[in-house]
Length: 484
Ligand code: NAP
Image 1 (cartoon, rainbow, N blue to C red):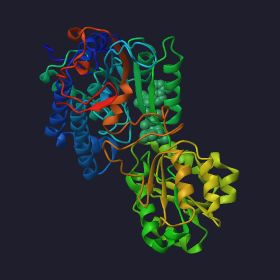
Image 2 (cartoon, helix red, strand yellow; image 1 turned 30 degrees about the vertical axis):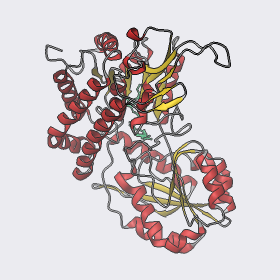
Image 3 (spheres, helix red, strand yellow; image 1 turned 120 degrees about the vertical axis):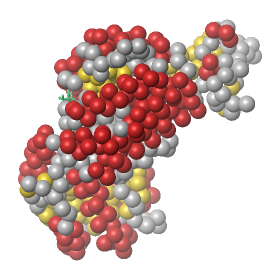
Image 4 (cartoon, helix red, strand yellow; image 1 turned 180 degrees about the horizontal axis):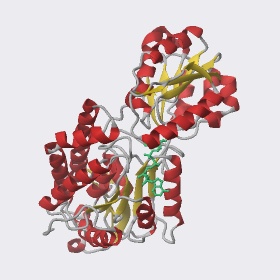
């Protein structure tokens, strides 16, 4: 890149440049792309204070939370960079020619993953750094070798613009080609981009309605493309009778978790199943009332939450009614019985994006398994109890079939950025349960396998050469083999 690029060059120009850049990126070395990601991380770290001020103005999130989120975002970029170079995510397999192979003479076959091409990333509102302009979707798309066209979220436009400028500056200085990254801002442009044959995949974090609309566009194209939407989840928590020995600790953990960040986390525990007990409800009421009000992200989120709160009031009994004051929203808690919940599981398992949750009282722990079997796809499901609780093994087994992450005696808010993280789940938690949007494994979403058959060594991509110039793990003739 020579002249100073603009973050929003216009849709068609951005798509043309992205298509050209995709060719360069597909041929780029992993170490080169890792350098780009680290350059972005360095640029964000260097401008952390300026970015946090902008984020505070636009999202009303507290400064310590935002500072922490910048750290999480730059860590995510650097961890992705390390993973890109480490190379195991490329799933390289080399099968040398074998005339005696049981299914008939085998040609020389070499399988590797290659980038799909330009990706539309639709940024989220609730994590203005970690799931926005330079967030996990951008990191994994760029890291895997795909240019990014970023639809910024209208909840933090100035922060998005500034972050986008820094991303572009970093990429420019690091030598990435024009078109590697650009932004758009309107819903119409996002839809037009996703319909355009130059976009090869989409990634999204937001509402079920928005995600579903974009998923349908991606699937309805003459040339359908993958669309990775992270949508809604109620993240049920199952408190077993044995956990009531730690009643106060368990209940205060729950209230802290569902009110954290004004309840605006996709991993917020929106339903708590607890043994029938007036003392549980009384203690919860006291804990909820003690939580200070805080402002929601923006008016749109507030409107959506207020509407859902009215539905919750119709459906369930209040334990503690939140209020809306000049300081923001205070939390609400509702209660019902498991029999009533079973009559309206759709109502129970619809997300309320804000500080509200529902306690479901049960008499017989076996009822928990019946409910768990009917759970729609979830990002998380949590059990609190002792490991020798008789219902624990069966409940854990059922929940593992319905949630991307199963948590034992912990809380779902807090998503560690690490190799073993699974941030995903079946519909409606995501549109693609086979992938994660957090952790280095997220790279896998933007690549597709190719086998090279009998291609001369000199023409092969570096990842599948016998001399292994990238120094990565390769599965050679069936055996996973470390680099020399
Ligand atoms: P949203 O309304 O789904 O919007 C997210 C992004 O997608 C915005 O940039 C929006 O653009 C775009 N978008 C939505 N529908 C679209 C369409 N049909 N065509 C093209 N672009 C579209 O989500 P939000 O504003 O962030 O929050 C609203 C709700 O989303 C919350 O109440 C909550 O339920 C859910 N949410 C979930 C998560 C999660 O992590 N799962 C995170 C945040 C929010 P425009 O704004 O320009 O229309």
